[in-house]
Image (cartoon, rainbow, N blue to C red; front, side, top):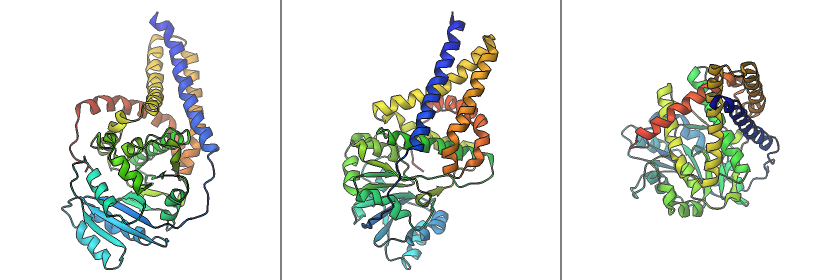
Length: 366
């Protein structure tokens, strides 16, 4: 009896997955063109750092040299033990709009104390967040990321691709990063935002301070950017900015174990998402898991093996076609040939994350 229902369940899981991917594809194709007009309202750029001396030396000048009329850069040091403070102080001699502050303990978890410290020291109403290990794509970064705030939007979700290298872990990190971008940008387009990336995110100061008062914002150690979005109640006032010049590029961990721990920190905050996007995300990931589980059981049982394999191959061809656009947009078209392999690996990763999140508890954000 169980064997008989495996095939229709397998077909259902494949159908659900394809519907999701096709919806994301259509949202990408028909994404509204972003306005090119720029409103130069003053902006406070906030960077939280702990032991980021090398990255500050490499990335801070490009942020301070932005082509923008009026802005300040606030570096919040979260009790670093390296040369971070000395490096920032040396830059202050050259950039009078660069401010250095030390994180205050407001009783919040993880990075949030540093974030709130930066916001409280910000003198402008438009805030732009990035990380010390991120490299901005152009001198127009501030202008492009904050322009929607001058219109009808309260939060702007940017894009933060992984720097392109040739290692296998880098390919995997870029694959996962592209998948995350496709999910959050599509859900925002549907009016169901569940996250933005704190490596490239703009928000109005009043909106941030109101979100801090929501208990959900401090619900977990990690995921401050996700929970900030989930603490906000007007889903129609969140915008995605995806021009290449608005990107911030990030380096990912050099090995799989470091990447896995970083991924677990992000996924761990998902239990605090709003109900509807949380359900739809769970259904999407469950469909991927079930495709591979039912595929394995059907191949072992020998039920309709040629048909099952044909359906699975057609599914992979659909994925290659539907994922090509976001990969090309993020400068990762070399990953298209890896889709069949990484799709299978993602199934294994999801299986590993479940027990890891259950048993491992983190105590620091860095």
